[in-house]
Each structure stands twice: as structure tokens, then as C-alpha cells.
Image (cartoon, rainbow, N blue to C red):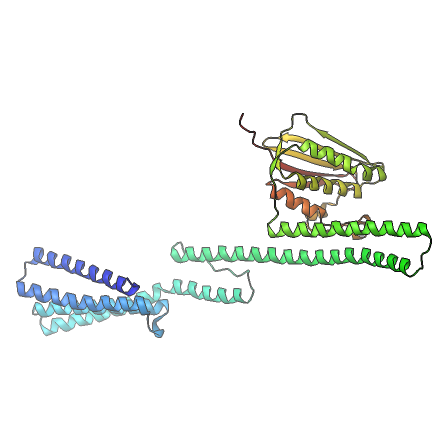
Length: 415
């Protein structure tokens, strides 16, 4: 059944039901002659049919262009209602043989009532019309990029709820736009930092290769040193490309995790063993402490291992010689709490909120000397949050830093 047919059936059913109720009430209360009752029924059917027909037409095809505002609609409805009332009362007056004087008096009173109704409809529509005008103005401003635009909420009715919902929508839209803008700025900063980190080693590799190919360097020891340097730079570039790929997966929300119940103690032991050489080269003491009864953890072991590597490498990078770095893990409620603490330079308070931002470098020159693209901590944050954990840092300049993260415990297998 089409929408027009459905509305028509509903309208006819409503009209017939009302007509039956009115005629039944007339018989009970007035006991009119059968001829008058038939005339009344036919008239009510005619006037009601015309009114219902207009209503169905408006619902399907809308109002004329001159009557599409809220005020015009209310005024038009008031006029139609009063016209129907006048027709019904006039018909009753004819049936009851009112005098011509009484009939004209009735018409005057009805016209007066129509005027009052129009005024009331116009005045009562003012707040709603004002809000609608505000909506139109707000949408136009938003369309030009003014996302701080809001619509005043002036009532507690449906229009007020619409205004509040509109403001909530715009606020969320503004937040999304600002996050997207910040992300785009971060991408630009990252691309700038990465392009620098790519150009510098590539220029060095190119220069050394050209020196060897052109015969500028003939000493075998120098050639061997150049080749070792080239190999080291290629490994750094490979690591940088891997970091960028992993960061892109984190940004896209498609970082694949292979979750299984694993021992955090084993990961810490592997980290201590793998990082021992780097720590020794910087004359740093590297140690770990894990509670013997620590619970297993639901995690992707390789990813969490990467987090530990990144945090320890960061501490090695910024801890002066003869300092120390420690890794500790303990149970805290339903989580395992891991800390990487160092006796390094510390972090300025103004830099703490940005320390996990991609490509953030508190000291770019120092960062370049120590290698890396400045995205290791950002990757660590993405991995931990993908596990449903948290990561944060506590630090003071000159007093070292403590990087901490949490991971949910594994659910013990039923025995």
C-alpha cells in the first residue's frame, strides 16, 4: 500500500468514527427527527470530508510556497478550523430556523474569533520561528567553517530538545575536526622529521659509496670502516621504515595483535639481555626486578617486547654515563604494572603532556645525534592502548624519569 493510500484509509476511518460518535450523541441527547438527523449526518460528512481531504493533500504534497513558514502554517490552520466551525454552526442555525439577525451576529462573532485565533497563532509561533531562524543562520555559519556556532536553548519542549541535540552534534563535529587538524599537523611534523632522518644517512651513504667507486678511498681499513658505517645506516633506515609502517597501522586502527597468555618476566629477561651491550657501551647499569608470583598476562609478546625495547632505548639515549636503568613489574589488582626507571636528564614539566606525541623532540639536535625518528614512544603508547592498558611518565629535570604501563592479566584456565 502506498503512503497516499495508507493516509487516505486512516483519514476516512477517523472521519467515519467521529461521525458515528457525534450522531449517536445527538440521538441520545436531542432525539431529533430522522430527517434532521440525516441532513446533519450528510453535512458533517461533507464538511469533514473536505477538511480531511485538505489534510491528506497537505501531508502528501505540502503547502503552497507562500504558506511554508511555521507562522503561515499556524495561521492557515486557524483559518481552516474557524471556517469549518462557522460552516457547522451556520448549518445548525439554518436547521433551527435562527432569525437573519441572529445568523449575522453569529457570523460576526465567528469572524472576530478567527481574527483573535490568527493573532494568537502568530504570537505563539514567534519563539519557534526565532529558533528556526537561528537554526538556519547556524547551519549557514557552520557551512562556512564556523564550528563554534551554537543555537540558544530557550525552552524545555521539543524545539528546545532539538536545539540542545543540534548543539551537541556541532560540539562533537568541532571536536572531531580539531582532532583531525591536530592529527594532520602531527603528520606534517612527522614527515618533516622523517625526511630529515632519511636525507642525512642517505647523503652519507651516497658520499661513502662514491668515494669508494671513484677511487678516492684506497686504504682497505678506511673502506672497511665505510662499509661498516653503510651497513649500520642501512639497518637504521630499515628500522625507521618498520617504525613508520607500524605507526600507520596504529593510526588506522588495524594493528594486528596475537593475544596469548605469556610471562612478563620472560620479556623483561630478554630485554635485559638484548640491551646489555648498548648499556655497557654507555657505562650504564641495567637491572630488572620481577615479583616471583607475578601473574601471566594476556598480550602479544612481540609487541610488548617492542614496547620494552623502546622504553629502555629511550632511557639509554638520555641517561648520562655511570647512570642506571631498572625494569620492574608487580601485580596491581587486575593488572600488571611495569616500570622503566632511569637516572637520566629528566623531562621538563611543559614537555610531559607531549612526550608520547609522534615526532615530538624536546631537543631535536640531541635527538638526531642519538638516532631515531622520535616515534618510538608514540608506537609504545599505541601498542599498550591496543592491549587495553595505560602508559604514562613521571619525571623532573635532573632527577630521571619513570615510564610506566599496565596490561590486563590473563584469565586463568579452568582446572
